Image (cartoon, rainbow, N blue to C red; front, side, top):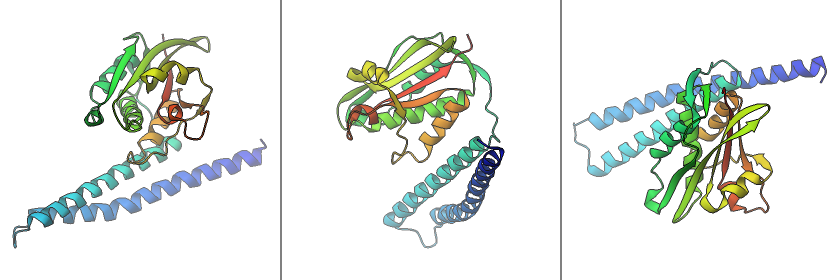
Length: 240
């Protein structure tokens, strides 16, 4: 690439991050005002609100809170892309972290969809931002569980593998019967445009890549391939 091309890319990247920052700023103010008025209405007792009105206001406040969360995710994406966030560096065992996160993921149990962790229990030491990695794995687990419509068991299998002269922690998240096939297929970009999760998945990918890792899906064999949509593979370089 020529020097001019590099400069153009930098300009585009800078404009993109500036636009995200401006959008976040402009959205936060009206959302804060709407949220404040909704809370005031909930406390207003003169005249008392009916149960129907209280329900409508409560649901509106939940939606407002969801917008606030999405704006925060958008802000983090802009900062990660603009390299204005420094990821914390603390000792963390990825395998232990995966087990801790999986233990708290319950949202699919009403459909009898369960998440089971197996493989190596520890021995995946790295230096990383524990809080952001925890949030990233939580988003990935929830995304895959949402793909299962009925009784199913999703496995998060932990493996330590050789990688570029060192070692990497690999976590394969897939249907119990498809773990090995998902891992052996050629990698494809992770399908992150899923409804109901806000920007949690694009943010998760950036966090993993910010640690020198990678998030991908198995390459599909057909348009409606369930293994592609229902699987995710994470690889993170280890320090020892």
